[in-house]
Length: 96
Image (cartoon, rainbow, N blue to C red; front, side):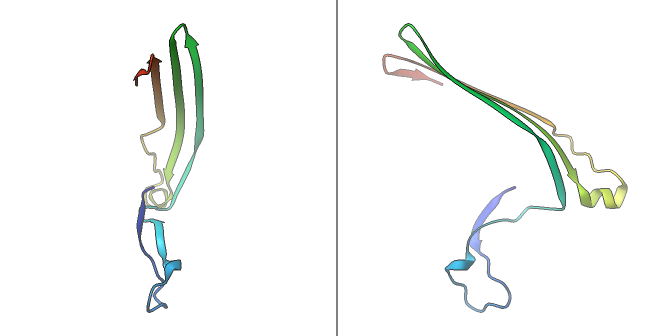
């Protein structure tokens, strides 16, 4: 989903107020997305070095329900996503 900032007033309102200003998700469809997200973080030291680690895995099963109604299936290809980040610091010098 992508959120876009703007003025979103109903057609029944002539002049927008502060209630009508904000973020709205504009690119949503008739979908069902199920899945699992796991993440791990760790910090440690080895001698004069300090380390930070982050790792994550996401499994998604996205289904476009409008395509199921049209063709009987709507499999979307992206299922697995993996991300990792490692940083080290030594005497105020750091690296990502």
